Amino acid sequence: MFFSKLFTSYESEATKFIAELKAKNPNLEEEQRAGRALLWDKTPLDLDKTARETESRVKQQSYVYQNH
Image (tube, rainbow, N blue to C red):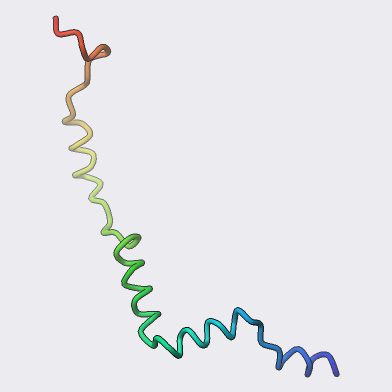
């Protein structure tokens, strides 16, 4: 019983740092989401278009510098 009360009030330094950071910059989470969308969230691939592009490629010669 004593330990449960002791540990429920504990807050780590990392948690305090993040809380202070969010208090200083309230738009932080919104900026993080925008950055994630920019780098990671991509539109789904069109499988038919990808298959057509793959089939329409011209095969490269085994030795590209030979022009005979």
